[in-house]
Image 1 (spheres, one colour):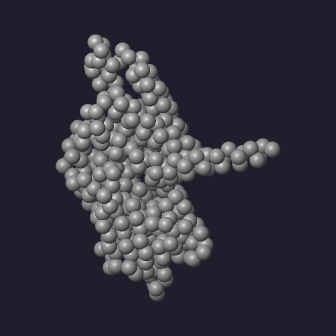
Image 2 (image 1 turned 30 degrees about the vertical axis):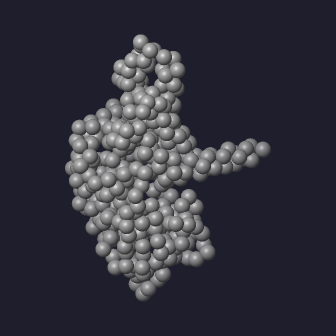
Image 3 (image 1 turned 135 degrees about the vertical axis):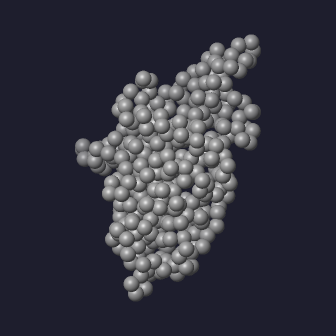
Amino acid sequence: MSATYAHLTAAHRDLLARSETLARDILAPIARRGEPGKVNRELVAALSAHGLVPEVLEAGREVPALTLCLVREGLARYSTQAETAFALQGLGAHPILIAGRSEVVDVWIPRVASGEAVAGFALTEPDAGSDVAALGLAAEPDGGRFRLSGEKVFISNAPDADIYTVFARTSAGAGARGITAFAVPRDSPGLSGESIPFIADHPIGRLRFDGVPVPADHVLGEVDHGFGVAMRTLDLFRPSVGACAVGMAQAALDAAVAHAAERQAFGKPLSALQGVSHQLADVATRVQASRLLVHSAAGAHDAGITPNTEAAAMAKLFATETAMLAIDVAIQVHGARALERGHLLEHLYRDVRGTRIYEGASEVQREIIARQLFRRAGRGS
């Protein structure tokens, strides 16, 4: 057994290995057949057929954060497209699972879990990104329903998802206390959108709401308490963004080590050059530190240790920044060939950049950590 995963149980190591094998042997070829920037429904169906999506959308329970992290790390190591499809299904459907009324849960969760339906998570707006409490999509009461008006941007699986978790303002001027979560089907009247071309080939888009009617029973949780639904979802998924970054960093490190061992320069392999080998040693150390931070934050979440915000912030911050470094170093080791369109490292370079922004930018994570430091210092004094 590798010391890399000595802290995990045998069941956890098996889950990681299964995710890696599925990504490498089955999911990666399906991912390559998809259209860049569009939902790959064949890939979504395959994730479900092999049990990964049902594992995180089992009715009546919240998936353990460590399970989510291990699947995302394993998938990202061999297919970032499969990892993205898996993560977006979970992110979009999780609020419905934990806060939806039975009539909504019973319709949508089995369809998403089976791969029949695709889910999206609609939180970000043109003027409300990291500051979630500033969102302004209006949800006005209209008899026994609500009407949603406004715009969402950088939305997962938009505009092709079948069901969206949408966060809208139900009380003006109330900040975080005036937000409500809704389950909104794609075929709702007045809902439209388009894809947004991204640096990475992810299915991301814009949604427009023109008085979209939403029945009252499609409220997730309670009116004006949607911020809690969003935070509960993000608290679960934030460490797993770090896990995705660990998978990508490991893939880059693997490629760099293999190349350095084989590539000859100045009469010797690159691995014999200390300037190369020591850089890779530093990257390997940071990747393992990232992995342990991620697994520690996930374990704290699963143990019910609250608040877990600081641990999750540290895990996401360190892992995503490390992945960016690891891929950059791997490209430098490979030289110009790694810049060719279609090269593994060129692909990883485009994919990793967003991890330092979505679900809380690195600057936001540092602010969270710093506030906790000074809060504790204040209590101590």
